[in-house]
Image (cartoon, rainbow, N blue to C red; front, side):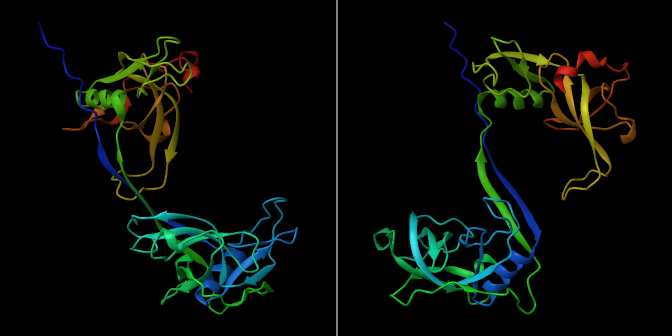
Length: 320
């Protein structure tokens, strides 16, 4: 008796998504962040008289622009909390702490930040806390280093503020980063392994018979599992495309270039791919293309024209 073949190992890989988030500031956010640098917490008054901290520039109910700034207290009340026993890199504190929503005195909404506490038993809803300012402040939310328990000082009040400070902060650059372990699952593992063999494999829905490339393990329309593997392509048709004019960091491709949706022959869904081997301004809907593999590459580097006549619109219109 021949033993059954073991299923292929499901792939896993560590991934990092990281980019600098750059934003210019309007008058409200400019005043709020500059105020933090000066140890002043500002909110904004909405059209119905409520004070929002952090402030927003448009009323969440009426969508009207709001500019009336209000200074609130640096003490407040915890409205809810959650204990963080394992802080991640770049979080406000390196030791276990509580994430808290704090309604500052004079405010009607709560601000999210960290509370420095010895343990979860020291945290409760309704407890009084105060701002602990960072030693060096630059005009960022991190100018509030964290909150700490308040021994019982007098509650602050809201007071009008003109939002004027010397050398106001006009923009911010924040590093956004997400690191995680990604597993493509059974279906996409098979798809990726097939690409390494220069084959493109999708899966067919047993109900509607649409072939999904890349496969998803289930049909999003019918909600049934897709286990029937189907090899498609290698050639396909450009269904739609865009011309990229901005060069991405660490991407060694000269602009302008074309990124397209390509419906591979036999597939019921178009996938993404870069178009090469043709001037960017000659790419068109219906262009017939084929994959080009780099030496040792595990996936197509780009797609190039096959030289065939363009496909009729009716042949791919349902895949746009």
